[in-house]
Structure formats: C-alpha cells, structure tokens
Image 1: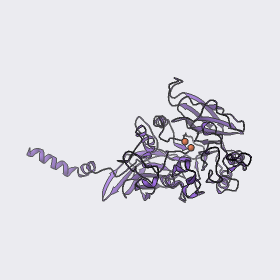
Image 2: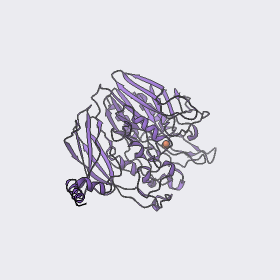
Image 3: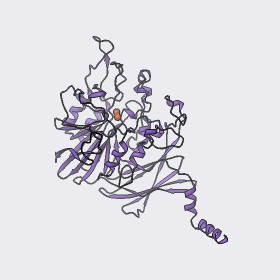
Image 4: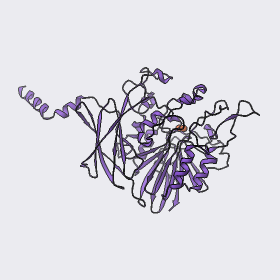
Length: 482
Ligand SMILES: [Fe+2]
Ligand SMILES: [Fe+2]
C-alpha cells in the first residue's frame, strides 16, 4: 500500500502538467479555423475561447515548427445562449448574452506554395492548453497548380455533415463559401456546442464547426485550409427581418455583426451597418477571387415595401458595384472568379425577384414592381462579361445548377442538405436555362487550376431513396481553356 502511494506521489511530481491538464476544463470552444486576404504570404489562425485567454501559434515548414506568433484577443459580441434548456425565445434580447472570446494569430512573411505545420496554445493563469498539430498550404506562385471546392448553405441541414466530410476527403487547398453558414447567427449553439444551450435535437451534431472541423478518416477541412466567405441572407444577426415587416423596414435592424466578427480579418473595417464594406478580393495563384455581398429577402403577400429588400446596394452608383468594377479591372490574374450569395437566375419555390427597389404597382395595388430592373442582371452581369470573369458561384437556392451565359459560368453547387427546386419551376425571365441541373442527390463541385486551364467537376456525394448513381460519381464537368 505504501509502495503504491509512493508511486502515485512520484507520478504526480513527474507529470504535474499532464495531471493538471486533465483536471482543468477546456478553455476553448473551437478548434482553429483560418481566413486570409493574402493566401500566398499570410494566414490568420483563429479560435474561440470561453474566457479571456492569451494565445500563441507555433508554426514552421517542418513538423518541428520552430517559429511562433502571438494572438490578439477580441470579444465577440452578440452571441446568446438559450433562455431555457428547452429553447430560445424568438426575441433575441430575451436570451442571455454569452461572452465568447476570439484569438487571432496572424502568420506573416510565409513562402508561397508551401505546407506549414502549426499548433495553437491557449493560456490562462499560467496554465497552457496545447492544441493538436495541423497544417495548411499557402497559395502557390502564378502558374502553379491548386484545387478548391465550392460550398454554401450548410444551415444545419440533413446530410450536410456527411456531404462536407466527403468534400474534406478530396484533395483541396481552399473552399469558396457562398453564404448561409447557419440559420440564425446569434444562436450560439448553431455554431458550436455550449453546455446548457438548447439545440434542435435533429440538428444536435450539425453545428457549423461540428461539420467543418470533422477530421476523422482523412477529412481535412477548416483546420487545414482557408475559407473565403461571402455573406448570405442568413448572416443578418436578427433573422426576424425575414418575417416581421416592421422590424425589416428599420435599417437599424440590419446588422451583420456576428458574421463579420467571426471572420474579422476579411473585414478590417468591421462596419456592421447597412452598406458597410462586406466585400474583398484575394489572389490565389492564377485566380483572382472577388467576394461580394448580394442577398435579399423574399416578398410577403406579393408586395414589398419600398427600400427594405435590398439593403447593401449593388445599384449602378453604389460603392459596392464601383469597387467590383475597379477590382476586376485591375486584376491581372489569368482567371477571375466571383463568389456571391444571391442566385442571379433564381427560380422555383424561392421565386424570381429582381434585386432593386420595389414600389407598389399603381395598376395592381398590393403588388410590387421594380422600375429599376434587376441590378444583378443589369449591373453585375455586364461587369462579369466586360472583365471576363470565368465563373460566379452562388448559393441560396440549395440546388446544383450550372449556366453558361456569354462566356461566364454561373454555378450553384449547394445541393448539400436539401433543395428548393421542383421540376415545373419556371426558368429565369431572360430565357436562360441551366446547362446542367441535378438535384436527385447531394453533390459537391471541385475545381482544379493548372497549366492546362480550369477543370471543374460535379461529384455525387450521396445515394438517396431514388437509388440513382454512387458516391464519387462525376455527373458534370466543364473546362476553361488557359
Ligand atoms: Fe440558404
Ligand atoms: Fe439564402
């Protein structure tokens, strides 16, 4: 007995860190995720903690790493836990605020086209919690090969997790995410698990990070690559703007604060208000990526009040359209790609609604007309064509669809959780019909950029009750010559 006590005491002396670490609760809410505006030379490693903590990142070109960067700490404002363990109150203010802290380490002066290993350490009161070692790849020099995948509309949908896992098992260097990350940004459990916070039982394992941080079975996602996001309609903090006309008509209720804080380095201005800068661009080797904010709500009862449907302008004189024009004009990359949420050729259950200001039709009281036309079609499309954008990827309609219009590929590859399309949906009023539409199963699109040009492939990611196909089957492809 005495001997055993000595052994236990000795172990305690030899392994104080290990024993202490096991007893202390986790400081972090999430594994690291990353964003960057300069993927060839910089990476922001971001993670979320439960309390104010210090953070650092070891990194380097070999698994030994050797370099280190200190993280900046921020508090993310606006997250709320549920009013009770049984549910959220529909009024966000009636749910308790949950402070969440964010650590961001900016790794700078990286070499292009290299694999970097990294590991985060979270420190509180002298206690270090060391994370797992991961790696990421910096963007290559122009001319070199890389791969990426298109994603959007995760929103805790059925089979999203499985579809994302399939995506993470492919050879990809980054993801373009066309918005609608979750359903309601202030509901913290839609992002990650928080003790005592309500989760819809069926969605309990489908939060944003539970999907994007999967890493079993050679799955590599948000810990291993940057994601280039754009906001969707579900990135507005208070989703009651979707269902409550009074709330929707007050521009003060339009706020993108949680989304913009989560991906802070993409939006250094952090202006959450209407027409704040929610657009950016980044060069990834031969590819120029422009991310813009285009989304709107549907109408109610066939009538939309003037002004409240298209907050964040893309009209001809808007700051965003002017920025996009200048951005595309000066990009000298071989290929140009735009990511935006609103499906410009939207149709179906969602319906087709022009993006511009609605006014009441004098001939038909209670119905909306759009004297300014559709700014997607009339303002953005000419920019895409003039500046030879190769592809635009959308989300929002939850479909797999690809169009080719005047040399521009328009793609939504968001058939990941459900779809909003039925076979008798009318086509876009322009008469354009998709080259490919495929909504019989979940799917993803993978894109390869190499000396040969761009090759994009639609891959089947599930087999549904209809029995069609098999997982991994290529059902769509297109190329863009160099
Ligand atoms: Fe969506
Ligand atoms: Fe949407």
